[in-house]
Length: 413
Image (cartoon, rainbow, N blue to C red):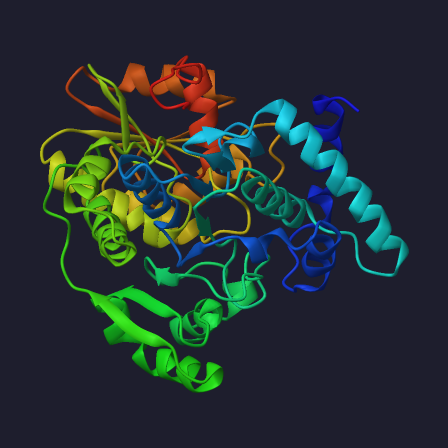
């Protein structure tokens, strides 16, 4: 079967949604020879910043001449970008080989009474299969939703686990309070495994952390990261320095040199996260997809642009805190242009977003598509103003296509 047909089959399982549980992924991986047990894994959890932290770790490992695998989600273009070895996507040929094997394995486990693996479980299995086949020295693994029942939580004894931040998201799965969310996120912590987190997370959630320590019978740490990274970074966002410092702390534990850390962090580029892609007017792409991420984005904008007018193009998934996100944006935006994409069914319609935003900002326009949205934004902005495109990676990807950025080798490695 061709890659395109296999990709279509993979996408057909999106209707299964998200499943919190490990029965299907364990059964699938067992059919593949349990490749996750052959890997040395750094497991990264938290609400926001996981992908950026994995990216930083990748570049540091490359500077250290260590063969590294990386698994992140979601994707801008294709699931292939989520599965990387030495910062190179899994190729179509490699993905074709792996998916054929995995779909055969799915048929076997379904016939035995196990539930059909979801799209995310299949992609996770493909990542483990690929990293084992490539004999990676180390794997940097980002959780999906996170927690004990996340499909990535099949690694028995990771090198370490780390948490970028814990904030409001996935409340339907984890609970409405930050305490409940923290308790769920800490489910990836294992007995005797070093555990890293930022100081504010330790202060806010140390009771949940100690409850997990008792549950697993003790872990190593926690190792608390206190500072922000003060060296050179390509990203000027306020959150980049926190994620970079976490990557530095983990890298020092792994034995990477200070020079490799410094060089890797200076080179790392995580596209779609406060990415400045044009000037006159400035256009910024940011995949901020929940309320805490929007607040971080706004903090970054306020730090860098004190007087400029901010024009927002916004698209948001239906299951997110739409009012909270738009309320934060409405406080700083001179104009909000809402947008949706016909083939992304998770996105709220532009009209509905505009109705919600209408109470929060004096100037609201619902656009028909990204082409129209960009035309409206450019018409509203002078060369000194800032156009910010945010709300989801689907919106970032649509904007990147419209701006002819998706074939640029500088970020597609």
